[in-house]
Image (cartoon, rainbow, N blue to C red):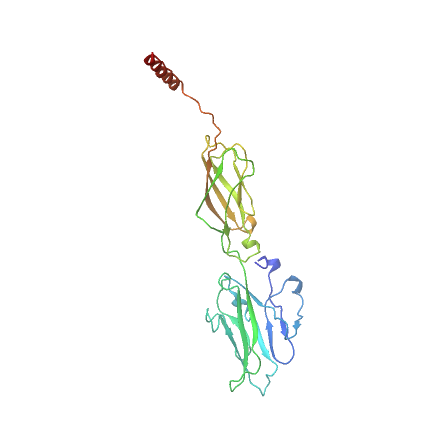
Length: 288
């Protein structure tokens, strides 16, 4: 998510961007922060510069901010009638009907909600057309950026993770790695996943730890003994927003088998020793 949703940081209501000089201009109605709230100044940019994108929120009714952008031609006058049109995603390409241009005023309106995970940026072209259907200006690129909200939970790469580790191994031995992804905007808190072990069975003593950021599972004690516990079952949580309150989380099961090492001296049962002695005595008497 590019900006917090709190009222104190309500993003961008009227920030305007104009391209000056003879030609087709665009006024982007994106929004403003608190520092710009008391100003009506315009940010002017030359035609060859990249026009900053207009911004809309995903999964929200953005029609309350209409018009979200406006285009205008220097050639328009009382004598010259120009009709404004747009093409591209949301107009002439799917999802159809999402954006509508007022042909007389050049105002661009949005009609529905959008999903950033499907389309993070809309690319449109603005056109100025004369009464006889000729283009009055070169097409103008207009981008609509979709701002992220935290609407996706982490997804594990496997339903059940299975690993193994030798008994009596060193503390910190890497057992396995738990993988999960989040479809929200990359490199933001909405997609930053934190891992933690929710529970362990058998519960005592705590035998494993997990790296919060990487999901790597390691041994926490050197006392793993297969003869005592041959396997462990963990419940691991992956939670976005780096594990903070309000983040979305999912849980998975982790099965860890403790493999055997040769750490026990063979012991003969007393009955076995007696049987062997008896058989040896019989054999010796037969040989006499």
